[in-house]
Image 1 (cartoon, rainbow, N blue to C red):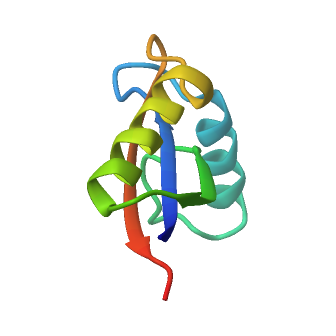
Image 2: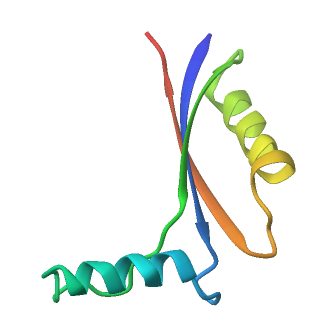
Length: 84
């Protein structure tokens, strides 16, 4: 079976996000004064072959923790859907 995973990676909330701060400052200067606390992360789409959704989820979780994410500074979450 083929599955589609959407992965979101964000800096840990306890850490500063200089890129988000720069975007917020630019936004405020260009008229978006009501914006607060911009945080910048990464979004990754992946197709994966697995026998079932639980196996696909396990593989994606392992992929995230071993390849994509630095757990010292980032957290992640993902969703998985079967490709029909």
